[in-house]
Amino acid sequence: MKSSLSLTLEEQVQAACPAPSLCEKALRKGADYLLLIKLRLSALALFTAAIGYLMATKGGVNFKHFAVTMLGAFAVIAAACAFNQVMERDRDAQMRRTANRPLPTMRMSVMEAGLAAAVMSLGGLLLLSISANLLAAALALTALVLYLAAYTPLKPISPLCNFFGAVAGAMPPLIGWAAVRGSIHAEGWALFALQFLWQFPHLWSIAWVYHTDYARAGFRIMPELDGHIPSAARKIVAVSAMMLLISLVPLWRGSASLVGATGVALLGLMVVKQSVDLWRRQSNAAARQLMLGAMLYLPAVMTMMLLDKMMLMK
Image 1: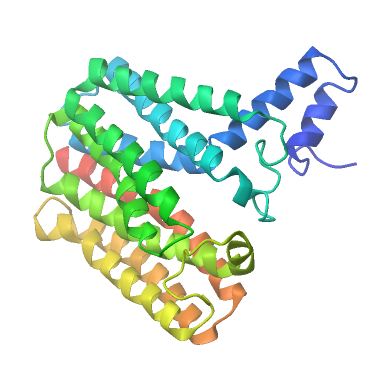
Image 2: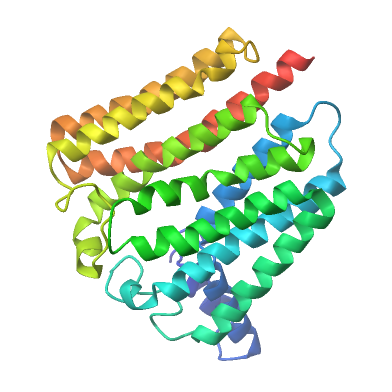
């Protein structure tokens, strides 16, 4: 008998509601909405928005303000993911890793997904403008527009899509920072730059592993048409090294301790090593290791930065 941890989401729904019922329909619909908003990606983006907020806080945290701000940010992030799936539904159907999403399988209509995305985006922007400030709302709107009007339509055309996607994806910590300060300082921009650079090894390692899938759908994610070549891996190494340098900006500005900066540097060196391994081995196994390492790196390094700041404030 399978343990509850090994069951898929669909199997857990069936276990909770063995006979077709309103309960089963509700759980299946909820599971489809979690897929629509790309929960794991949205949660990571929300986490970095929370880090930006807490890094900008000088005294105690206003938990009501924090909660409402995060709700607004999450709504906009989720809306961007949902709109993206509406726009890419035909290409998603051609990729194994996305073919089971609710729109390609027609478990959800385009109208339903589009309406949900519109409600989330408008509600999120309204919450940010009221609970935080207009700068936070403007940054969220900028990210939404870049993601949908530049990144998504450029994916089948040019690897330039990565630049616009990285800018949009690096906005969450700025949104959190702006919600507290009403302006953006050097430390806030450092968080933005770190998250901007992080997205390249993260996305390119995924594109390396799923290159055939991306090619089948006609996406131009990697700088090279064939992602499995040394020049692609060299670009990943170069960006990972830049990411390591950016992560040390707080130390250079005197807002981080030597112990904290050492921990941050070690995490960065881990990603650089994995990037070099990919360059040397040119294998999907090495790309998968980098993909996992990059996923762990961002929350780990930002958590370390926050803890270091809290220790310095004591």
